[in-house]
Image (cartoon, rainbow, N blue to C red; front, side, top):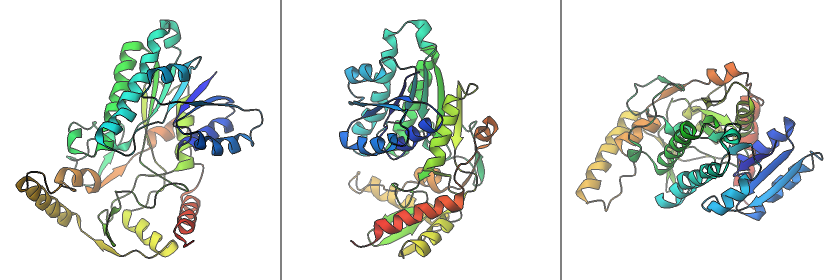
Length: 343
């Protein structure tokens, strides 16, 4: 069985390839934009001499590149998505790229399509949580976002990407497994999720307070993607992905200050954040858009409203956390400490 991994050279992608190899899969095609991203994968393959890692260079915005990447593939782990840039660029790299990938199935016979499986890495950002009460549990039954235009561009583009996959699955009949990770962290990643707060000049505005963070250590996340993506009972299902032991935003910030470096922070209670958001919205309208509404009440409720999170469906399938939270945090903070050390 030939496996395609899109975004294979990324922060998460390298770990997904490693976990596939660890599970005994050896015929893997890694789709990359940048040849330099193949370096880590080449080093990884040295630990698995029996593996046949194939590097395929291309851009999913190109239908020809998609067709070439999909040749003879029966299992696709689709990690590639727009992470930065303009709205047009992010939608192109998430929604348009996904549509191009899915349309390669049109050239296959129906019997072959039904034996093809896509594993989509989506996001917690697709959930519509703004209207939920504080402390509400977010699981796979939580409704998806109905006002994505009021959210950030990333969440909007990921929602459209997931919708495309479900729409095409209904039409074409291939197998689909969707994984929705929370905050992926670890060596190679960033220091702070927006769920903790925002850096504005020299000050870090701590907005998360005592809210839980749906943290997923990158190795644990990759294991969940491979485990659920290859499980015989997972077709047609979506799974929340986060670690078992979650910490609050305030604890994460406190640990960062203690184990990495001091941070000048100001904590804003949620009611203050909502008042600030209202003021920013007012000035945004009065200035006719010249002053951007960096925070809106809808965004505030979506990010800092305060939820609990449920990964019991993934655990019921048989997934278990590979790296304990204490060990994961130690690795994360050691990496960030080295990264912040003056050269």
